[in-house]
Image (cartoon, rainbow, N blue to C red):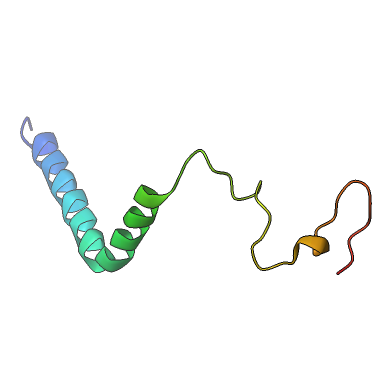
Length: 69
């Protein structure tokens, strides 16, 4: 009865490793794109703080006047 829990733990660890590798290989293109995007991102820049690029500057509302869209 001494080797049964050890053998069961090794089987579970092997199954988890196999599952992880299968997922990595199946989603490799998507994971590569996501990792590249994270590498290129600037953690100091908050996209919510900058105005959208596709709107004209007069379409943005300020504290003084209402928006005119």
